[in-house]
Image (cartoon, rainbow, N blue to C red; front, side):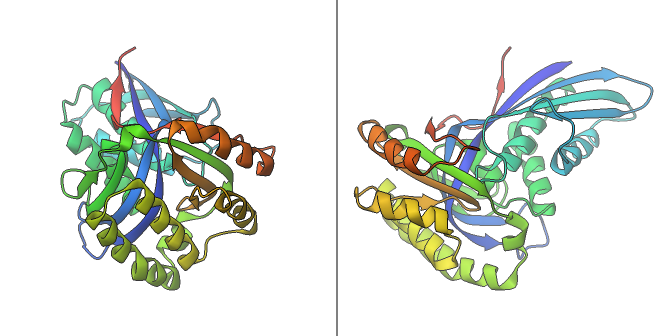
Length: 304
């Protein structure tokens, strides 16, 4: 009773909050982003026990609070009738947490996939992904991350909602680009999702930019609109601004991840060396420059 699930990380370029529905499955966001081939790998081991015991590690440590993981486990156990288990969960997170890489959603999604397999629940993958989505929505840790990570690619989320309810379009050029990132630190997702003034500015631009990208779905437009959005809602920090000024001189458009103090861009392979050199000049000791492929598979069970 052991299984391993993987979810790609995800960077949101811009979005519109769509959480008016009372049904968390219908809440979500419209917007656009990109899934990356680094993410969260979650291994689950389950054994029958007299009482249910849950042990969760993240990168080998038990000191991190893991309310999302705990909520996913609680939800998944609702599908098991009158049985108790010893549940061991190990999250291996290959991206900086809190820097706009969608690690919360990736943790929820990889865990729900692994639990479904380890417990032998036989739930369809869409149902499993919906559980992860509902947990993210209810804990205010994300809105559109799970549906994006479920399918992968450079996506436009054209209609809000959980996987199977929301709609996405994948840019056909997703395989042609690489993602380069320079993370600095964290920004609070709940702070923005629950702040009325921030929500208003987000929605003033997010929906309009989503419609515009849907009409002209190119990577160049995605980057341009992401930069405009970040500037409009006012999340570009001094450190990020210094990097953007340097990269603008090259003609390569960069923006900042939503929500993280994290510069990102998508470039073709022959441009990677140039952008990495600029990022290296501005990086801080705590984080490395990251060069990643676009993950076009989406969340999945890993065969060990």
